[in-house]
Image 1 (spheres, rainbow, N blue to C red):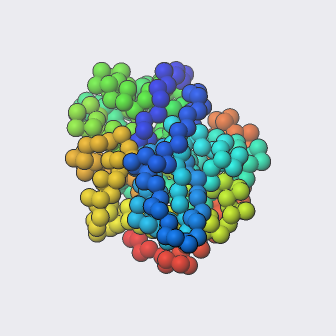
Image 2 (image 1 turned 60 degrees about the horizontal axis):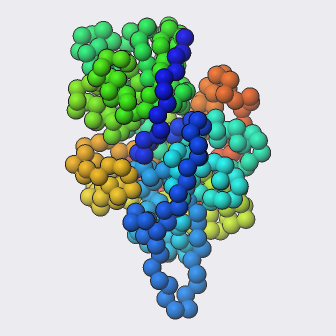
Image 3 (image 1 turned 30 degrees about the vertical axis):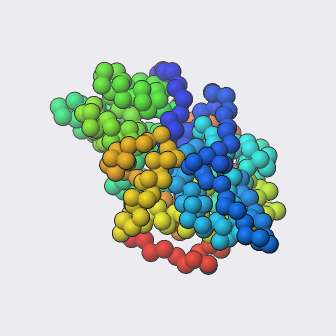
Length: 364
């Protein structure tokens, strides 16, 4: 039987999109904060920049927005960026639908699918984060003593164990439940609890929990403390699992389509700088790490150097099969009343336009 513990607020660097709606919404304009420098003065007679309203949760996955701003990619497209900070990605969905935001990142969770079912035509326009094989940004971790002793060797050995989620039914749990069922274990044979990532560290140390899906930097910190080990990276359980997507609001996508296309050009240029720094030849890595230290709660550059970065597709493609899998899982859980047609809500036209301008980025 699932027993839910206390849900603590979202970590500022959460890479996994959360579906919690328990806490009151929080949004704070931060357009002119040090992490988001205001646009420099326009030359006399220059056309005014078209402002795009972007919602962020100030985690590492937001880096492409700031790279596009600070490196002038937005300005080259005649755009500027106004940022509003939220305490969780799902908080941005309602403002997107109400034309209070133009762009935001979000997880493919019940909040997104239910909003679309209610007639809010949000668009999934590009990848924001995927779990690729070998990457440890998202990882199923197990208490180190259980691995060292051989008590846990397979998913069947999780029967009777205590499993922690950062929010109830976070999307990565879909993969865990699938692997349990393949091993002949019903999810009901585990005890489920809800803890923030920081509280999970203490719970592992106190042997109060046995397994859970963690994200960076908590994966690195927990391994350094010797309280757990990354046992199954999410991308090894499901290659290219869609963790988060880039969303456009309906007014931005339909009534300001030209600006929306140009924004995608600048955004993907920022993604490519990020990708090159962490998954390419390493160029600009120090500068990107410094930027991440300004826009997240991690100020320790030495820690940032050690953690595994989130993977983003430099061409913006979305794994629609992954979206269908997760949506069906939520439907089976009762979190959705019906499924939406993924092909109708994923709109690749903006990324296609950007690729026509900047070409495809070669990936392995």
